[in-house]
Image (cartoon, rainbow, N blue to C red):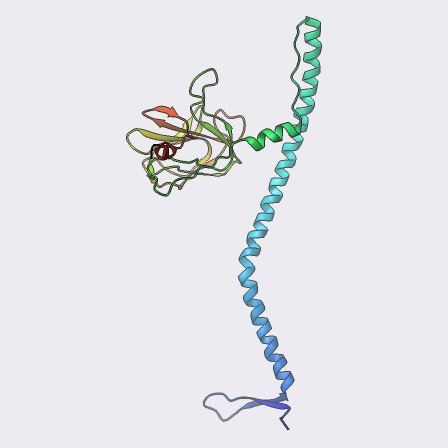
Length: 261
């Protein structure tokens, strides 16, 4: 008959004294299984600890964004109420003055969101063989809120990309930091020189992360987006200039090469 008991002995080194415990096999198996379960639990805890911390931080960030959205929603509601009052006042004044003017209707939410869905995303792929000193692509994720307009009453030498304050701004090409400072129009501005003829400009930043004369590589963080200078909402103003003449940043120079090939 197999024994139902196990004797566990502890004999200290260099001594004849010993400690021993006699216990049933099932109890020993239970103790060993419990120790293994505790060790596995500790390993799993530390394995998922980083993920738990990151999710907790993300939760706090989402909560902060929700609070911010609530404040913006309240402001929008106030603006809508003020707009209705202004509309009524303008309508009455135009009637009294005998002016044939109709205050434009505010588009329905479905119309506004449909246009938003059609807005170009600030994303442009860089070919693997692209010259890294040539600015290609866009420096930030967001929506292009204002297009390039090289002439006319609405002259705009670059594009505006709507984004949250503090969004990382990336260099679209390798080069040297030619200018860092505050501009009365562009706010906190960074200018990169990529070669003798090409520069790129990044305006309205909240914080600048590079210093004049520094060498930057394509994709490197150079600033955090903001709302400085002449700006009505948080966004990044992005320009590319060739021989000091602005060109459309949405025109990918490698598309033309592919067509020629």
